[in-house]
Image 1 (cartoon, rainbow, N blue to C red):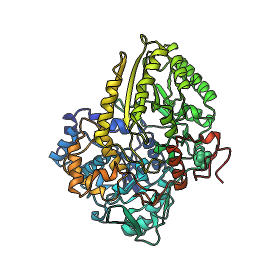
Image 2: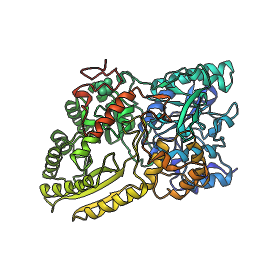
Image 3: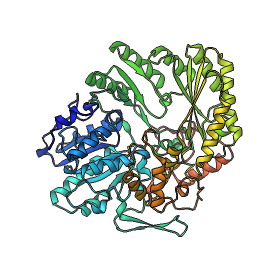
Image 4: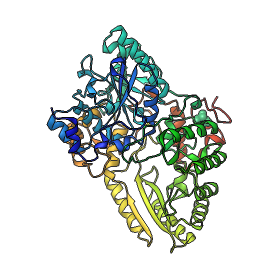
Amino acid sequence: MILFEELLKRVERPARYIGGEINEIQKDPASCRLRFGFAFPDLYEIGMSYTGLQILYGILNGREGVFCERVFAPRQDMETLMRENGVPLFTLETKTPVNKLDIVGFTLQYELSFTNILNMLSLSGIPFLSKERKEGMPFIIGGGPCAFNPEPLAEIFDLFVIGDGEETIVKLCEVFENWKRAGGRKEDFLKTACTIEGVYVPEFYIPIYKENNEIETFHKLYAGAGTHVKKSLVPDVNKIDPPEKNIVSLIEAVHDRAVIEIFRGCGRGCRFCQAGMIYRPVRERTKETILKAAKNQLKATGHEELSLLSLSTSDHSEFEPLVKELMEMCAGDNVSLSLPSLRLDSFSLDVLDKIGSYKKSGLTFAPEAGSQRLRNVINKCLDEETIFSSLKQAVDNGWSSIKLYFMIGLPTETYADLDEISGLVRKIMGICGRKRLKITVSISNFVPKAHTPFQWEAQDRYEEFVQKHNYLQEKLRIKGVTFNYHDSEMSIVEAAIARGDRRVGMALIKAWEKGCKFDGWSEHFDYGRWKEAFHESGLDISFYTSRERGYEEIMPWEIIDSMVSKEFLIRETNKAKLAATSKDCRQGCEKCGINMCLRSRKPDI
Ligand code: SF4
């Protein structure tokens, strides 16, 4: 067999495959009872920027007898060499073939990475379908936001961890170790695992379909499995230490910096946003915990940049004193501070000015919709006056380039709403002074997601997206304005998988067989192959995308309980139709069903 070193000489960026970075953990595999592979279905540079990897890597390796190693998707050059030379997919830490591990855990961040999962299984010599994997083969498990509709992967994965993974993964390890010690069969492990809160074992349920292709019901095949699987939730995130000894990438990662998660969840309630629903309620880390973790992580990694992670950074209740103390700490250590996901108000702009780590050329802002009516529909509580005054202040403070994010295809949208996007841009140009300002208008396409108030809504058809993109392109032919938009075909496949049922799994496999992989990269995405894959699986993509669903329809994710009630989601959808807004959790509880909010003044009781 070809030597690993020989492969490295023939690929671009060999550092993607060698491991050995600062803070990598090594253990003696022979002394470990559980060998875990944390698998990220994309390239090393992207996976290494993912905080969830650093969190779970630390937790798993913190357990005696458990060894967690990393696995990434190889780039095409490496994959070709591996296939030509019969080299199986391997872990970074010990170069162990993935099929020799006990558990392989994939993080499910984006639907268009699912074919990479299949490609990684194929490179590992692991059969795709759970029922075809023999005793002794690794368990394939998944977690992350896409696990909230696990059905397209239901026949491929053995189990899913729904919700916060930190505590569930430890319980799962304990179950595995006991099961291994007792010498049980695969089925015995799954039967015990499904009793852990947040664990969904799909083979214990079978969907029955109606003639019109909707789901009639789910039959439970194992009496010990729950009727619903409630997400796992860590009520107090302060009890879980943020990772401090993050692995430092050998090559430039997408984000090469220390990162501290400052809170989980978001109370703003944007109706299209899946993260805002599935990660409820808001749970903050205290300022002291954040400062201590930031100091320790910077010391352990030597990073020269620190970033804060959350869905809306400036919503932290101690944001101002926190930023002040972080600025002092960073200045002392010669570290730059970066603050993504900021609400652009006058305090944030002043902070950005002071920390100076932002190039004055680039400031991003997401009104999402052009008209106030449509912003109310999506519950993006932002008025024109705030938009104009923030941008005016930004330009007065020296920013010369602004990036504005909008989403098109939103429920109830008309061309009048699109006109207001260009109207808004023109007004901003007028207020801020045309000569000094460059605006980039970036358009994404609405993708209805599971567990959101818009989960029942139809997505625009391809032709509608194209027509709207062309329309906006014409309307935004303004000097100083650059226009770009997301690929409509990618948004359609994303939507088909995001709300797909178990049958979509066959289309995923067929798409992979036709050569689909790295679908999230526009240069690799091939809509023609996806259309063929759905068609050959006997499925109509539009059934999953451009069809409005009724409230009574059983959704593929019926068994998964996000703890946000269906009544709340329906209430929000009905309010959206009236362009009525709902309060941010900090202003008062809207009774979403979670009923355990640490920061809500009026809990949902
Ligand atoms: S229960 Fe109330 S405060 Fe808590 S997340 Fe839901 S709406 Fe927000």
